[in-house]
Length: 262
Image (tube, rainbow, N blue to C red):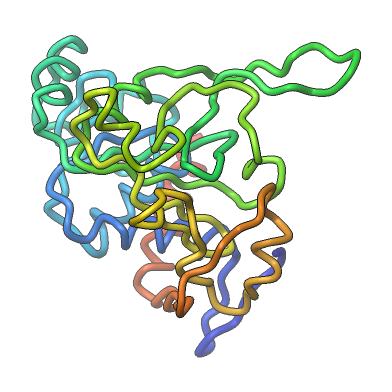
């Protein structure tokens, strides 16, 4: 899915549609452990639109960050400058995360499988080619294990949505509905995977990702063609609402602020 989409005289890109829907997913959260990249875009947009009181927590130890632009990394000084508090990294993990004090973990991914397990470590580039190295785990395994629930956001393609991960970095639902319980993981795990085509949610009985909602102008056939396994669909499949003028204005302002400073 490429180009611009028009709805009620508003034009937006597939990426903007994904980012807006990712922000909406945080409407009822109190605290969010934020990953850099698309998750950070969504979380900061949520603060500006659907959830102004959302407390953003970053792995570097910043609590209650309110950046005026999108941070470049977890070490971006903007996060510390705008935070309510800056604490040691061990405290973020031991007290806040493992103590069950964070509602939502928001993560990106290079690969996701049908049970929402995540790879951010290494990809197989094919015969005769060296492995493709990725950023690695960071705090993602602990975030996915301990947050109340987890959201994932990534662009939808057969490269990202795969039958079998090249490497399991972060456990989502393992390989069935009881795997997290067996491993003693307190959080619910991934509850939604938000893409530029739609939203996938785990089936309550099997924990397998199913197509729950389509973005405007997208068909179920397009989503299936971009998925590396035989994707099941919910009954019925919903349709997400297009971005509002306010959501687009705030999203574009966030991105522009980063470009202007650069």
